[in-house]
Figure 1 (cartoon, rainbow, N blue to C red):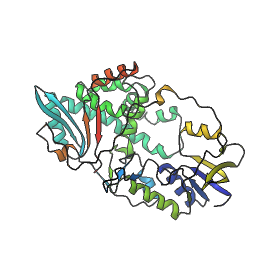
Figure 2 (tube, helix red, strand yellow; figure 1 turned 60 degrees about the vertical axis):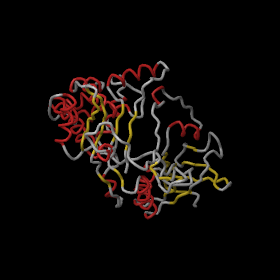
Figure 3 (spheres, one colour; figure 1 turned 30 degrees about the vertical axis):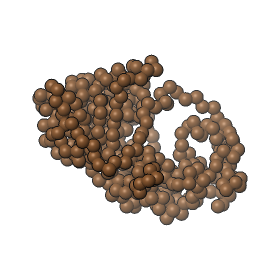
Figure 4 (cartoon, rainbow, N blue to C red; figure 1 turned 180 degrees about the vertical axis):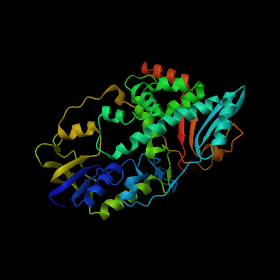
Length: 381
């Protein structure tokens, strides 16, 4: 380890690995510092159940927002598979168990399933129109994800090309998502299915004036201009391994088991042209300087290590937790129309009606749990 680097990156998660690869390829000396004894952060696969020889994606589980340009630039060898089923949502109608199945590969199957639920083709057509707004939005906005940030006014001008583009901007960037959702869709279950992509991971409601629900929805729907979430063969660990290999091949250096709490509140010195970072490794205190410092963790953690104050906002508190499940067999379905293999190879929704979700938000805001809880299962193999 040298005492000076062109760039030091704190956190060897997927963002840090991508940055390290590009910077090292540009000829800069790069050092990544990681507190864990493994590389990859949220994009790792780990043996979570000691009695079973299986490695599961611990946090992140599918690939959507990873720009294909980065995959090409870094020459990553990744095999990404489509999920035949986009979503599967059970329901009871007239005392009978059935389900709404949205297919990624068979539009006619999705249409028939929607007709069985609603009794007409109108809702399916309206859902297609609604989701087309996100495709239009992605066409205008996706490329900006790896470009310098532009102002809101500049981004809006990119949508001033035709009426549909203006409608996409108004519905997804200017007004609360609930307005467009209720304007296009009428069925409570279908509305709930769509809203789940605007709520998962955050505490919000369809008409939240902050528009955090809009941002969450776009996060789920614009990846690589298709919004499709694909399964990485080999799990997320395969993604991490390729990124680490790319960074190391370009000359980036790694240190794991790094303790940044060696000098609390002054670990990271952000002043001056050169940045200084203090840490401990193997019980020894180390200091390195760099021209550039990249931080791959949250503002709250940075504040702790740089001696800055930090006050979290109310919306920073999430309302979702993730459970990894390792199954010997697929669960049986009460909706006999669909085989389990079809239902469980995508996103499985449980109890996600639109009004139920609104009611749960209101009750949670008052500090109360609902007796009925929503669940969302993501199949990754």
